[in-house]
Image 1 (cartoon, rainbow, N blue to C red):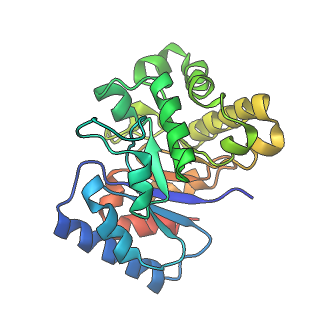
Image 2 (image 1 turned 180 degrees about the horizontal axis):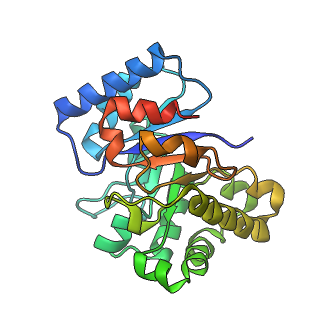
Image 3 (image 1 turned 180 degrees about the vertical axis):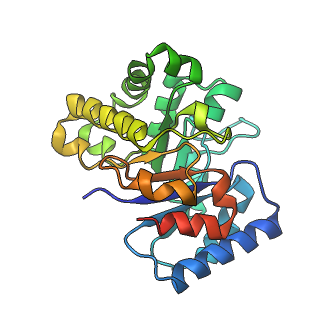
Length: 253
């Protein structure tokens, strides 16, 4: 049975003190309100990894992840952070291929394939992001475009490896714009992606892969989105910076 996952992407936000406060609030709410059966992943900026991990402690069900990793193992790559370094801090997840990394840092499918491999080699669970722009959506080529992202970056993996990957579908036109894909639109794309995975790896393998929705999920739309058969959770941006909103999304299952 595939995991239900709510992952918070803090992006480039929060000072040390703000990050500590947010983490403490989330952990305490998670415990006090007896949230269960949902895996929570906090993905802060790199300097927060160890402090956040320390605050989470042995709290069952909450994990820490990074927002990116290098495609290199080590060496003279100033400003980069390898998957092995991330894992050494106790992180278990890493976001790879977020739309902002693709757009602002020109990360392509070939590079992302290398990053996924490095994450898996170091015991990290990649949260692999894919999605389409408004232009592609309006042209009606969104499904083929996003399927190609999976094919180009993930289909070199073995069946065993692909089951260790979490996929996050990002309708880019709905990130930070206040727009949200309807629950039916989200289900349509998630179902298409699962079928595409099944075409390569078989239905049984595809049925075990969690596919998260990553487009402005908030407390007021989370329940409807998460009710859809192929929506297995959310990659949360802005709402992950407010403990009450984030926990309310977690409780929407």
